[in-house]
Each structure stands twice: as structure tokens, then as C-alpha cells.
Length: 161
Image (cartoon, rainbow, N blue to C red; front, top):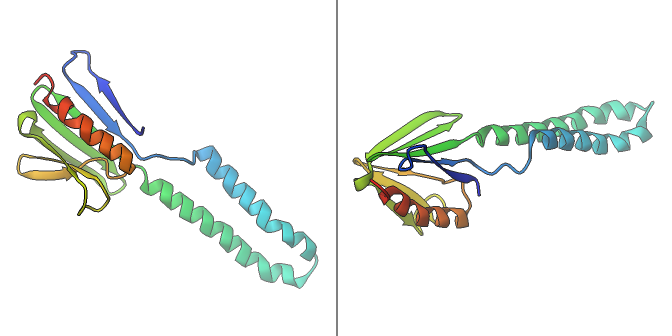
């Protein structure tokens, strides 16, 4: 799962780190673009020495460039990291993404975990509420992972306060 609980040295403090699943590593990205460029350029060998080659070449380069841009943009927007720190009687959620950093803090006793089956931006939407605010957690996780997370969170938040 793309989240991990890390206990601290003291034993009572815990950290939950969440990140979106990345199925295409950087090496795979380069390999995919190279194979795509090679496959698109194969039909051009028949046109070597022809004026038609120069007519098709910009469109094929634009296609490879478009694929590169789309995948690169997707990889950049998936640079999200959420860290929930449970320390003493406080719960703190920090979210880092390309748009900036956001944080939320609340007393663990008053923190409420809610699984919204319907009505959220995604099915089985998980939120933390407390200190007058409600914040999302793990919206980028799969549906099953959000359900598992929502069942784990209340016990972890309430434990050893």
C-alpha cells in the first residue's frame, strides 16, 4: 500500500506517511518515450529521400512531444506527500504538493475520522475533523486503500494519548 506507519523511539508517537502510487518509474518513462519514438519513426524509413518525409516529420515529432508532455505533467502533479504525525496528545497533518504546503493540527481527543461513502470528490472519501476544520486525507489512494485507512486511523489516533 502507498502508506506506511512508522513508530517513534518513545513508542507512543507515530507517523503515517502517504504518497500516490507511481507505476512508471523514471527509467521506465525514458524507455517508453524511446520505444514510442522508435516505433513512430519506423514507417519513415520507407520515405527516406522523399519530400513526404519532411511533411510528416513535424507531426510525428509533435506526437512524441505530446506524449512526453502528458506523462511528464502527470508525474509532476503526482508529487504529493501527506504526513500525519501523532505525538503526545496532538495530531498534525502536513500535505506537500506542487501547489504548496498545507498543515492542520488538532488535539487527538477531539479528532474525528469520517468515511464518506457518497458525496465526496471520490468514493469512500476519508476526512479528519477537529479544531473547527475538516481536512481530507489520502484522496489519491484507491477505494480499498481508503477503506482500510479509515478503519486503522481511529484506533491509532485514540491509542496511548
